[in-house]
Amino acid sequence: MAQDNQWTLTISPNAMLAALSVNQEADVEAAQIADTLTKAGICYGIREMALRQALAERNKPVTVAKGTPLTPGTADNLTFHLPESLLSEEVAFAIREDMHRSAEIPWVKAGDRLVTRNPGNPGVAGKDIFGKLLKPPVLPQFQLRAMSGTVLSEDGLTVLAAINGRPHLRREGKVLRLQVMPNFIHKGDLTIEAGHLSFQGDITITGCVLENVSVLASGSVDILGNANEARIKAGHTLKIRGNAIACRLSAGADLPNWPEISPIITEIILELASFSAVLEQLDNRGQLSMLPFPTIAAQLLSIKFPQYGELLRQLTELLQTDVKTPEKNAAVKEALILAESLRPQSWADRRQQQDAVSHALQVRNKFDKAAEQRGDIYLSYTLNSILSATGKIVIRGQGSIHSTLEAGEEVQIQGRLRGGTVRAKTIYVREAGSEAGAVTTLQVSSKGWIDVDKAYENTVFMVGKSILKIKDTVGRSRVAIGKEGHAVLLSRH
Image (cartoon, rainbow, N blue to C red; front, side, top):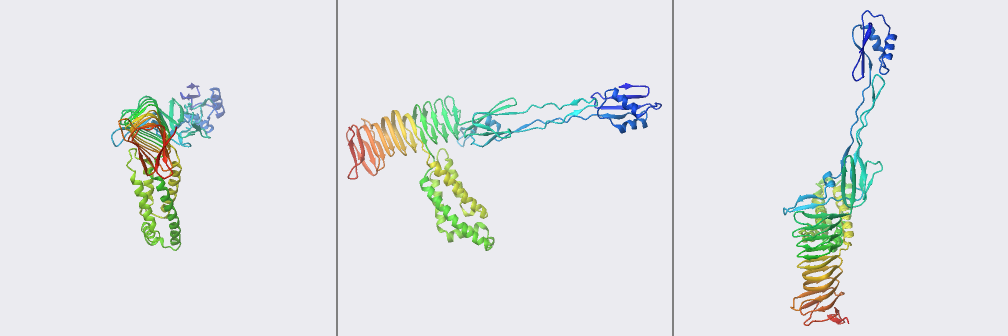
């Protein structure tokens, strides 16, 4: 506060206000008061009208200068397009219907958004009556770092997946580092305590897969140890560096009955294309609004397209044949949803009917492509197991004991084959059957062949519908269809 025998000048502690009170008897002018403010260092926010008011209203404090307060900024924030917990943790745990824990590994496809930074407001600077600039506090900003498998958007605000795989976030204060990895690595043994493992990509397990655990991957599975009483499904290659005991193993596209299903869906699409043309004619005549659309659609299909109902029945029947798989086959479930959408009772209007056609095309094309996916199985030894591969099965170690092996292409067993059944287009076994006479069956198509280096009594060879059961031990031989159309044993010496 500054005092004079003619006035009193009061400045607020934050230097944002100056108030002047002119004494009743003072003989001063506005210019003198302005000069006083200048000498006091006040240079901003001076109110000329207030100076005259202070002269007019004596002995009363009048605000003659007022600063501009700063406007604080707002901090930026983040939008997680996947829950942050899924990005930060290795796996997301859930409880399956069988009350066992399941480990669902997060998965994204190329182009998916992971995290977006929403910029805050930096605020607006202010100024006090002395002309001092008042800057709003600088708020720390999040920094997004696009690591391997990710890319930053053009505006620098969003991290997107550049590849298909498992997203991962490492957060260090305000710095977020994101990456997408095509392979998930489980370190050590996979036990029931760790949970069932599912991933849309490749899985590597550095230990063993133990009892009552399942592994499901859309890509390849590589197990560096053994597998014991486990269910393992790979979309591509399945490798077990050790042994498989009492396991169910499969590799390749999991599309039951697809060679039969695909042409049925094609016929349904063609039927619906013709049906859509009839609906358009009725719509142009104004006849579609006469009854509820599902009623008209069902009646019209039964009269004009009687084959449609039978095709839909066949499709549903084929799908339900294999729906109760241990892994709750996702492909079958998706196809069953398609079958339900093709029922005329589910169409509220023409748009939904047309959407059903589009959906059928998408599913057919998707599964046709997936059906071409080859899956191979490689392992050292198997006992009491069931193996299925769309490609080949190769057993490089001791061999296969009392197991069932089925391959779309070939089976190679470098060791012994004791008991069980092997089916493929071609089969090679170093030693089939046993001296004790364990029944061992090897089966190929009529155009295939079976090569053995040694086979014992009771080994059964099936080539097409022809069966050859040997009664004595044989050496290097090939079994194939002979000139007379029957399976024959040929020497390979």
